[in-house]
Image 1 (tube, rainbow, N blue to C red):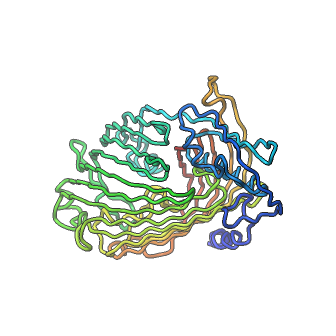
Image 2: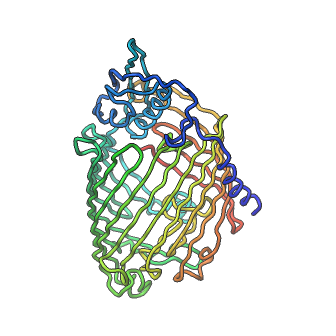
Image 3: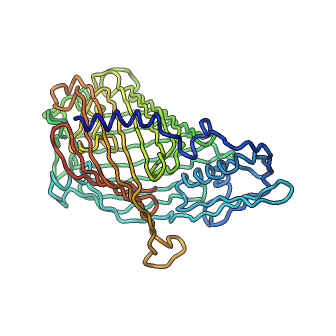
Length: 476
């Protein structure tokens, strides 16, 4: 407990006194140069973009041809432009360099190495929430896997638009098509997207036990849940860091009558086994970090509002509000510190079971409590992490090619402390609800090609449990 408190609260004080990263957000940077001479940007020359349109790259730059820039700000804006281009997730390497010319003019050379965008890949997925649950609870059972094909193009027309087709079978079925075009207008600040899919499951979670474990209902002979979904969204990104997204969706969900009649009458909050669900949502996000996939400096924050159903009480009707704030500090000499805050509230407090999810789903978990789920009406989460870069290196790719000439590796040792709280009337007897949750531990992060991250965490939680947990996140 003392170690946890030291990690958690000591981290906040350290974050406050830590120096800003060398390239901090524009509103906080301290310019030390007094050179106010202006230079004119004559040309911007881009090479290496075989698929990506040049204007998509130029959209991310702090310079435009014909602009005048203060000499003391050139280095900062060059690096910020490189960071913004890299964070499009379209390139594995980005270089932005100036060439100074006569008459106070400069050319800016941008060189990029494009990622491989087209992935028609076989799929092997786990039904369970994470690898540890599949390994330790279900003993690597291959009957609990999903297989099939996923076709993804991450840069379909060269405008950073994504196209996906999903064809999966096995313990569950999923057929889906998705398309998003974030820059669909001439100003490159508005976009749209849509998705539609059909899913069938042989197993569903119908309740959460008093020990905070999912209770499953399954039928090997038939599907116990059928879901059709269709969504559309409009997005707006007027500047560099702020994004707005408005989304509307429709879901038809049918579950086995046994779930409603015998296991959980509160699954939908009424006696029906079929539901037509309307979702309306708005999301605002601010993202200004050095690496969108593995941030080490900068900050991000956001706000999300979801309205489910057309009424305000009863059945599946829900009003949900999420807020998040993340801060990342470069402490120098390979040391980094981060703090991540998140909170959610759902109204009314009495919700259908399908609306109660809080912690333990996806990335919203305390490290060391991966085996548990905590449902509730409002929840909060704090994560603090210290990192130390150990080493980085590159090895040649086994087969010579122009797209991936080498495979990079970077190793970060870390120590962390997490805390959380979930309030719930319906789950008041569960051992992890309505009380402070905390965990701590140490681990190793391995960053490789396309920012794919392998996380090895050895964690300790408040229940006296400890163990090694494996997590894998991709770079797209």
